[in-house]
Amino acid sequence: MGEVNIRRATELDVPHIARINAGVFLGDRGDLEGSAEWVSCWLKAFPLYQYFVIEYNNVFAGYAGWQLHGGFHRAEPVIELDQLGIDPSHQGRQLAPQLTKHSMREISQWIKEKNTRIESHITFVVWAYALNFNALSVYAKDFTDGVCGMRTQFGSRAENMLRIRMPIVMPVRS
Image 1 (cartoon, rainbow, N blue to C red):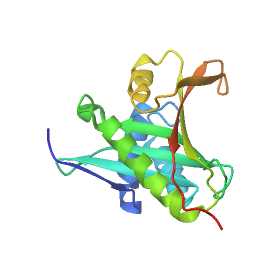
Image 2 (cartoon, one colour; image 1 turned 60 degrees about the vertical axis):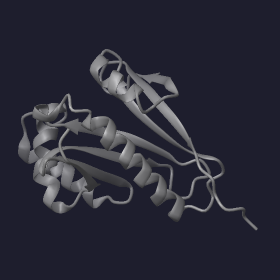
Image 3 (cartoon, rainbow, N blue to C red; image 1 turned 90 degrees about the horizontal axis):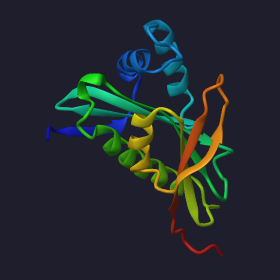
């Protein structure tokens, strides 16, 4: 296995994220300019939206975009993996699970520092098209509570929600 580096995204990563986004997701498929505008907007939404990137042998290989739901001080924080994109030339190297696990740890740490009201856990969720078996098999490795919901939010394609509730130990409140 090659050298892997995972870090928070910066403005310099927008063209790389946009290239992958325009290549693998339906929203801006084939529209690099539209994708770059979309990614740039979300990057500026930090900390509501948090991007992480993964490099393989010093080459940009993919990204994950996470969205926080319901406020920064929820007793039960909920974070959604909005997008996980790996460049097709880097797929099959188990980069997606590494990126997911690492970014979950970073976001958990960030939330613990920001939120003193957490009661017991942080909930991470991801939605995937019910017939996208490749995505579901990748997500099932990290979202180990399994399928915990369904919807048809966008168009008529059914989506499954996978979840993991990560226990958090917080200092005793006075």
